[in-house]
Length: 380
Image (cartoon, rainbow, N blue to C red; front, top):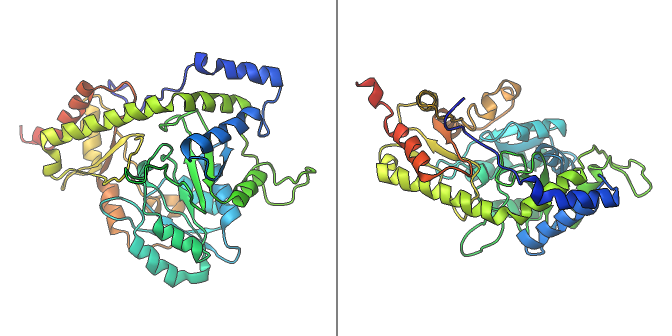
């Protein structure tokens, strides 16, 4: 056990959703896109996307990616173009859809898919591209203009926005990330996410027909007479999950503000200690992100494993998202890829630091103080 664990999920308490459970008992509807599920989808569109677009819930974001890719991909294509610096769920979803992941590098400051490489890859692969799957790295907004252009060219785009629920694109636009996008945007509601409900997810798009197809495919591909007419599976959430999601939405604003405050504490301490001038670096962000955790790059010549071990020796738990990167993992090593110099550097240096809602500035000071001691313990 660590004195300071990496994550401590803090879902809504039973007194906040028990009234919704009573509604389930009264309706005796427990699943199959029931009334609480439908209410949650409606409230998300109204509260988070200003009434623009449509959404459908899924049991988890991996199923959301699978359904979105299967209902978006070009039938003659074989490649799913994506960054290697992402969670394994993304290439796995492509595999389940019969596609070959094609890995690209990321940009060194924002850690998102390299736009120049993407342009070159589109020219190289042409009609062999079935879908492009960019990742909104650690919840950060991305430049959507590139992907809007691909959509207009007839190349489908599915955005992996697993940690982006609650992300605001910029102070000027002040809108939720993904709003108005014609492709699919997939969010995760896993317990460790900022909007955590235990297990769950959501697919958003301004394309209502796309969302209807995903909803149908998520219910065994059934038509209105319960005949399976398209490739489907079962991705529906229960009404109990929807009840928790509704209560979580009621209290999400407080979670957003709390996590933003914790992120600012980290920035304050990193600047106060001068670590950002000593070779440490963090992801360049735009807009406002509801952080799941804090990721930082260790300075040369120190690897992330060295940092994780140093933190562990001080009873602080840290992780290394995403190290190894996907192309370095056994399941995906044989797949084609571009040069991946930035990805491999970041995978060697990235350290993900604790973030949970009870963290205070004193605990963060303790974490950063340990980071500050990196290398010194060897000179004593």
